[in-house]
Image 1 (cartoon, helix red, strand yellow):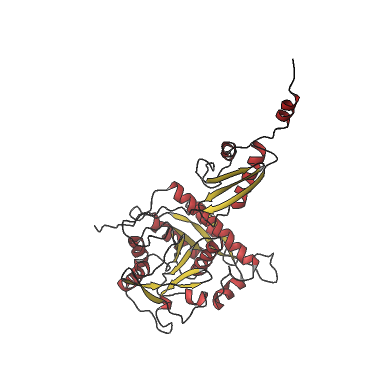
Image 2: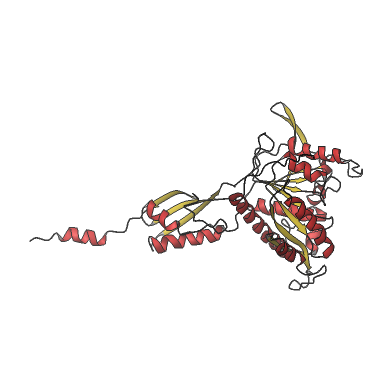
Length: 382
């Protein structure tokens, strides 16, 4: 019997041909670290292209600022090489479709996917500094971000961003005059401090302050944003209720320092948002001024206000602990001269903020995946 040696040689030397099904099967073993499901089940893998040993695909992230990007890249490359073809040259691309669980029957802030209120039980804990740098860290991650300074009686944005004396413009949108937020460092900014003379005290009763907040929400053209970070006034009061009754808030970030007096007031904020008639999710708690590190001794930590009080409070109330931000001279100086920590050159302060923002954005994605749609708060008087 004749043997076709040519056909046998072709068969033996034929290379393995990868298919899209092979790639998806391999990637079904790669979990999204925060959501606890694999990339294929979550429908996060798109545009698989195979050419010989070259394979590329796109992972659709839940936020442009995703801190787990590099981890998912490495895990995906390993999965393809281990489970499909060890000779594969894998290119992982990323895009983002920021998740949102906001729901509103009207058109207020319809282009804003997530509204994050930054709150504190008392003043002086660095809430505005945390708000500004959180917004900048999200922006550095590639997200579209706005920062609203809702601290009517003590606006900080004009000083912290170096825009004192500047005034926002007005333009007509769909027949309605709308305020155009200022833009600095890639953020959209709005503050009462941009509308009034800083030499004059803002002496407003509650209804006037609440009206200003409604105006910031309904008459400012924020446009398309992944995150609108709102720097709230300290305490719990009219402005907080007005905001939550005007728009669906995705969640709140609680800011405290480690000292007992700040922790006691932080508990009031936690209690407010946990009330059944309000029930706005708490994204987590961050401990600001956690320790002092002098510039000349960068490895030293001095716990001036107590140690890990915020961390213990988060554990007590079963809240996500978003991290510690140290008391560093450069953070204070940057805020005073209009160059926040995220823009400055101090790598230690910048890294602390980045770690906090990474934890926050992960918890926002988890909140959107696992909790019900956010709605406006409706408080019915007895």
